[in-house]
Image (cartoon, rainbow, N blue to C red; front, side, top):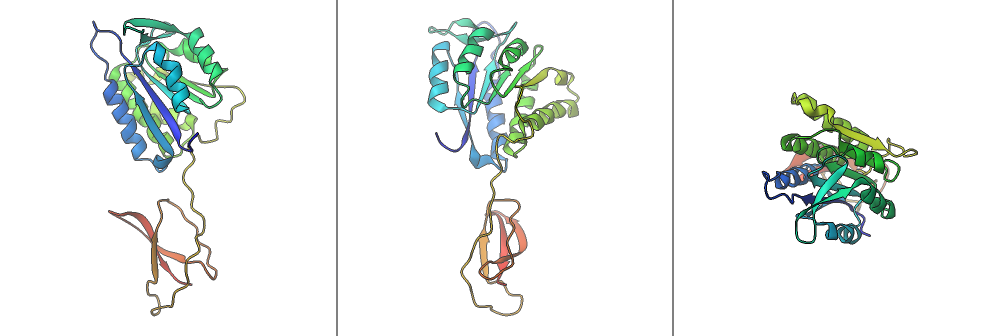
Length: 257
């Protein structure tokens, strides 16, 4: 299994007689949010559109996701997916609980971004570490805002609890009356203070000694993709004097000790 955390985005909208859901906008918002995060290289988004019931097990086993995100229709403790012929079919909470119970070795978070999915979340609360769902119908616009903020926070290294709280806060900041609809359940025994996506870390890096060119003159430049780097001021190590940001990324200007 690769080191990156995978987010499996399962999109299903099997109803042909209703206005289509804005699922492409939701996955685009998630991708954009993750790309801006400090931990962007540690998270991989895997979109799976028009998911059918026969696709579900294979997709979960093929991709080994840490996070499963369902975007689509929900109602009365069930979600709707296409059957073998693409026709809408009900997938109940018992079937989903059994499936995630079998595959919960690596699946830690399940997000059900559909209407009235709270009964499923309650059924999963003893099975996966974190389950997120909706206690009422949720508009497409609110679902997109919630998802973008939630994954944006995860990509910045925030915990699942903090990411959920920030997503709800974003709805509140926008004056959205649907901010009370998202619900988070945490499995008993799980420590919510632990981040799901760790930020990249960089330790002290030895550099080749160089001859000084004069008092206070720059002797070496290296670039690191990290926010905070501590360099020990001892022989054989460079000392970071200045930090800079430019089109090439973020880095440090070094002077020899």
